[in-house]
Image 1 (cartoon, rainbow, N blue to C red):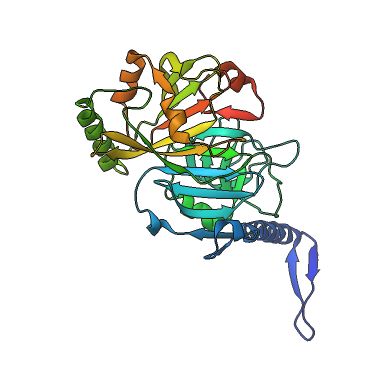
Image 2 (cartoon, one colour):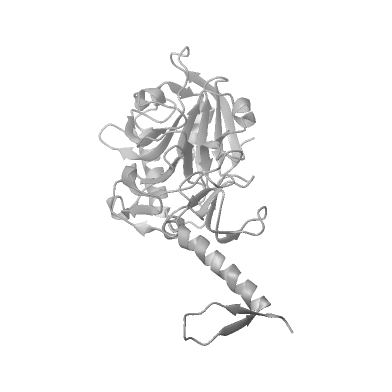
Length: 340
């Protein structure tokens, strides 16, 4: 028979007993409950920069539809959610501790699992998991002590992680940055990475409308990203996590470094046949004219045609001054995991 352990009780109450097995199971359950109690949060109406640890806001009605962008600010320990360039939610978060720093860069959501468990850290629960790298970096619910404490993942309050999991999609863009600034609305007078004839706008516009209508109905939508390297003058076009086209990039004023920016396609503008983008810097970027940066780049016709055929709401164009090899080798910086 297992030995029994006396449990402290209030005065005048009858003593209770439980076996060692029940005692251990009860303690484990209490520890798990405490962990997720700390991961729970309070929904508040504060502005993002006023949130205290464990708080979040959520205003999906501000922008009911359109491409999503998630930005994680490591210095602020905040995660921001933008739809069509409008912030619809923000939450406190916990990123990687010293020795396990959360990598900065531009990522795509590679996998979703509502009831995920870690294969590395003792089968630890990672509810509402959005995977960012195949090496183990993800966004998920977890303990928020108020300072960087994870093994590299971005932990969120449980309640907020459930809301976020409900709207994220495979292939959408996540930016993890050393700073944060809200996206800027950018209009490009012509097709991205080059001029195009006015009659081509109709085909691009139809493609965008088709992708907008299909959003939420297509079980396996293709996520298209274009990565432009300033140093090696190269363009890589990705569909999901596979490179489907490469080519040369022509960059105006080539003595000036190409800035680290993410441009998300949000729509088209009929009056002048231009495309609308939501643009944001990552890393240590400033707030210069982002539209001018986008106009500096032109692609060879074959690559531009591959891009045109795949244009859809939420498509991203990522620019970097690093070469693709440098970006691949940097241990603390990533430009879309799985490219290389």
